[in-house]
Image (cartoon, rainbow, N blue to C red; front, side, top):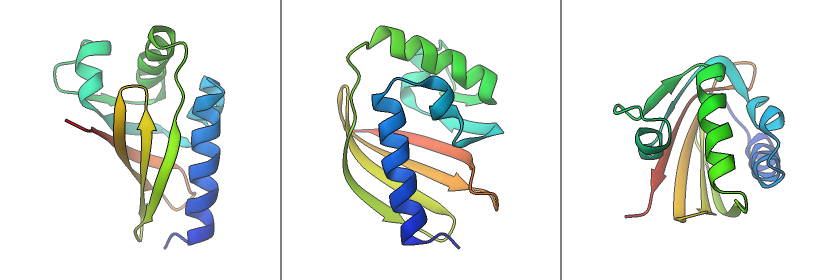
Length: 118
């Protein structure tokens, strides 16, 4: 079961690592075989399913995204806590985002899904 302390620390560190544009630091939050889904994947990574699997594939996608948005900055709005998941609500480069993160027993993200304001 995740705790409020874990969620607060994860949210702060995750936002800070993205705002630093530090890809290795960002990836340190994730299991090697994690799954990422986002509608942005279909356009940036040219993957029609919107789903990528594994650090190498997702790192390439995020590297490209960081290059396309050099002034990327996230602003945390709220954090929601579940038993094995956290939702971060934040202001992203193109508007409001909620992102759901599922964690394994080691506290690493095994699945994440980005959801964008329409």
